[in-house]
Image 1 (spheres, one colour):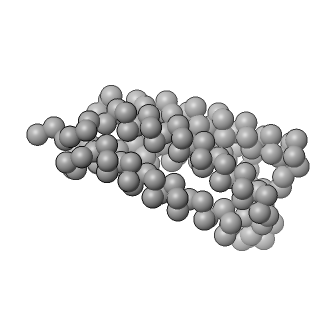
Image 2 (image 1 turned 135 degrees about the horizontal axis):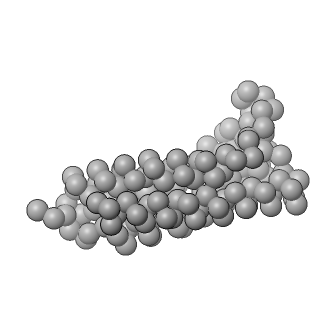
Length: 131
């Protein structure tokens, strides 16, 4: 299990650093305002991208552990679940963020996290469950 959880942790921290840099770039250089629609106008805290990247990595680690122990084809099940979750994550920013520009930046952050975490974890999973 340690061999599976390690890639989740490493990829989550790398995604956290990159996503925090993207947030800084968008907010400081492109003057993008990351404001929630409800409660109206509430700003997303500066540390949120890094925090959510790590949190989602932990949640992903729990899911990976379950998949590795309960399914016959861990690699394929992980890939399916994670791609569905990533696809669904593209919708939320457009519903919860006040501007399209900010929502697109958040979707970019989702792509970064997915591009790092999904293949790293898939590579660590066995193709067929151990019996």
